Length: 584
Image (cartoon, rainbow, N blue to C red; front, side, top):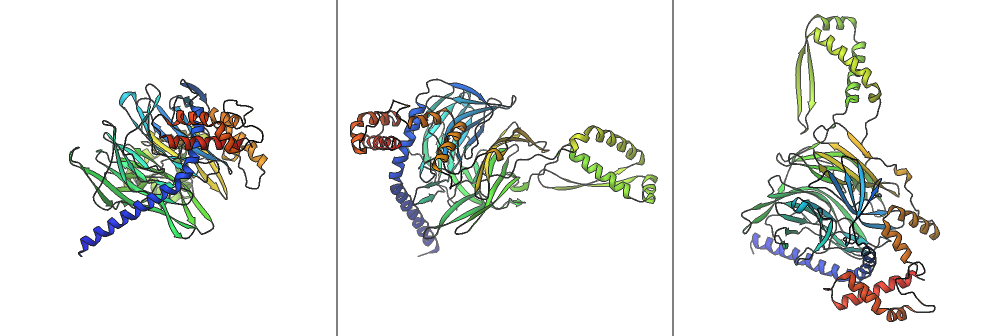
């Protein structure tokens, strides 16, 4: 057998192994997914009560991570959807929708009938046609204890002009996943990677799928070349010509030994390139070796696409994993990748006038320390000034300038006047986002916007709701649009009582939308008579038999007319079980 045949056999063997693992994960997670479907359906029944669009002004969305943040294609607005929040004991999932007005610096919560179910770690992409659309695919729903996960494979579109949600049902969609990436290339949505996790198993993906925005059809691409290894949470950036995407970094984990998983932070880079016409297009993977100053390895970084064909990478975390502990170093640095030059470079903020004043002040103090002889020599004739300037692409430029004695005196007088005007500003410290991971980022009008995310101190997790912006042309300083003091966030320790847990859940509900409050009310049949109440001494089996028609009707209403009767019955039984157990 030749080398080529051996290589092909090895590739086919790996594909078979991956297919078996995917089938195994699907089978084991089927039962727990049915339980979670009941919870999802319960939340959807609350969403079904919304019959019209309602806008509510708010200070800021609640703290969250793993949400999506997009720039409105037609207006000066940002769009925030979904996400999650963990308070130490309970996980909250959202499907609320917010619009941020850039000019007014205001947030508005918009309730739209028939929204997608609650989720996090999904992907959202905006396109300009039809008054603007936001396409949403995948993501995950977690049980309140964070131990069970349901991975979506649904596709939704928000029509921004009419403010209506629509679910797009098309065959051939990627399998359910979260942590994947999705970008727009010409008239296609490309989906890459992600993972699927159940209680016992997990699987990471490196497949590529395309959704055609003209024909509304899914297709799985079969690129040639060596693909990136399976991963989630990578950076995926479309090339400026629209004929390819760049993949960088990401995270995956594998089984090191029984009951011990080993995480891997990837720092490699690939290009997926399209060639040929649309009917006969071919895709090819190519590994890239960029030059410049590369970001240190990390996961959970934020990504966005800036002007001039540059990809932006902010923050993240580098975890040091041991068998029984996990420590992380969080970042708040910014790196840029020039796609045209295939080069990384760290972003160098130039600073405001206050920084210039500090430099001038240092120069004057240094001059004051010079001897009188040196001052006389400098005043006798022209002086040569040598400056080193770091350009945005990382290039160091040396500038030589000859200055006469007259020019020196005039500039010194101007600087003294500026110093008096800027004295108050000069004392202000440089503001920047604190180190964090899993924040949301997007670019609008050449400004980078950064929202939320999280960081950890010891065993405690702080989830953020602040908002920053950075002018990518000026590159001078971060601007705080919405402040947040993370110290005000409450955290529940494992040792706290169940009563305390319930109180904190109620407080956490204040950060959620009105559906959460209604959900808590539905857990008590005396407060919400819509669900059939339980009877004294009644068993679960008796309750399910007595109320079977009601729960099947509710499940059918939430799952749609196309759902199979057998699955509707299972979901109905699970919904009845959830409600029955909440009454005990």
